[in-house]
Length: 277
Image (cartoon, rainbow, N blue to C red; front, side, top):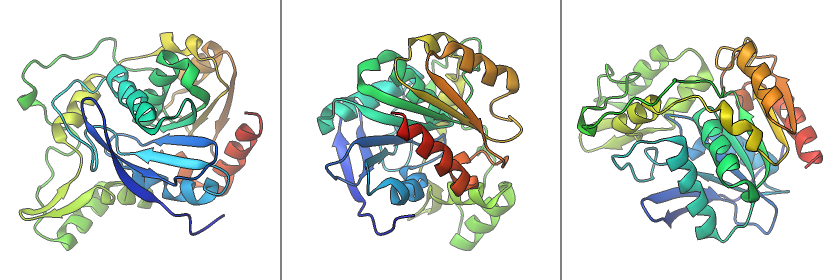
């Protein structure tokens, strides 16, 4: 484990949004990391510390999340992959190693299929290509509300109230920290940094994407949590069958945050994958 990697914090002015991102800004091969729904770039700090000596690590807050713009849009895989394409243009990067966790895995998958020349290697972490049969279209986007957090007593009146509520709501210390990363104090109280409307739009756009997998032209690793809650056996097998150059691993821990649940095990799998890229 390496320490003291300098993380620079920047904002990319893209066509449709401003995208906040972490960047180690070194002259190394690039790994671009995409967080899951309700998440932030912050979830990749340990990954940055581990790989920051050998690689330039970039981790954005995706649209609707964190310090990036939160427009009223559909938050589809295509749209969010387009943001990443614009980010690479902004940074003048031709291609990257792409890592996506959960929702970020779907965005990474769309990106690898739509912009194959820009992806040297792809890691999809605990995300199935299964999903809705078709997108749920909401014409009046003011009616969108995140189903996960719509009953939360937001804004929280104090930090202590927020911490206690989120601790009771989440089922693990990693999940607790994941949501705490998006907590921010405002004049009205403690709010979440993600857009409730954006989360609902993204959930309604979470359609299956198995048809994209044969288009991948790079080495791919799939890593799922033990038990297959997020990636059922049939989906895991089907993904491996459809992806031309694929290896798959299952963690010994059931936590959805596979890159944090057992770091030694995860980095062993990821080191092996990078060695073959």
